[in-house]
Image (cartoon, rainbow, N blue to C red; front, top):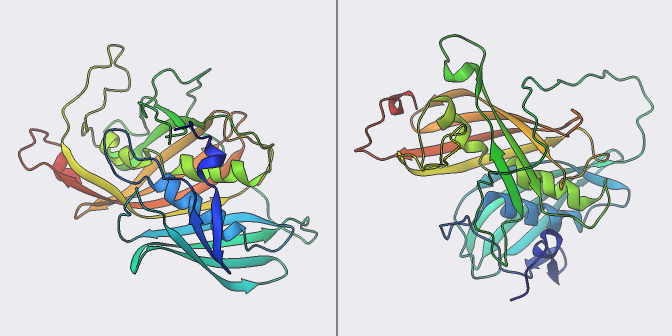
Length: 305
């Protein structure tokens, strides 16, 4: 099999009007047969983009994950055109295999014409100072012909309180997509950021609660594997809001600062900001995740989640 590029992995064929199917089998998380949220969301966004009006660009999406797909079978993406306004256009995408609904995505596109009216303008800056020249401890390995197309490295969590309460902490992830052929401002880089937004961010509540999940500690030079206290952790829903649509590349280093504001009954809320290397806020994300812990785990921190 020929090794795919990121852009090739998102190729679609049109089955009928506003119905699309992925051309290539999607990649799975290394070491498992589980379909990755990054690929699922990017494929749905690519399908919706095929129906967007001219001069409109991808601006936000909200995904509800319903059922896991069979990664060896193609998925059908049924796009519904909910609205076409002067400033915004909205699409809904239902991904299905046969009669099984896999996940639903609502996607908003915005007119690229410059805004000419009065407007407020501000954006947060990075709160952590971690900087890497390159990714040397990739969490996603090995790479196969189908992917993953992402490199990602964790840095040491930062806490804003002496108590190191999880809700006061920030986890920073440094990530990038493998080289993208298209230039900045293209759909490929927006889809790349969507992929990066859902890559390992749900490990932030675990790290901030000091619960190990099998990977080496962030500052461990020996890269010794830790005890895995988690049976399952997965996304329930995921939202991405873009604040710029050009001027960055998803194949350059992207810095994600992830926080958690709440956890109870096996769930946790995450909030993350994605920045370019020069500190521009590219997107913000919200994600609700679900965690099932091993009952015989020796970790004393698990009760926090």
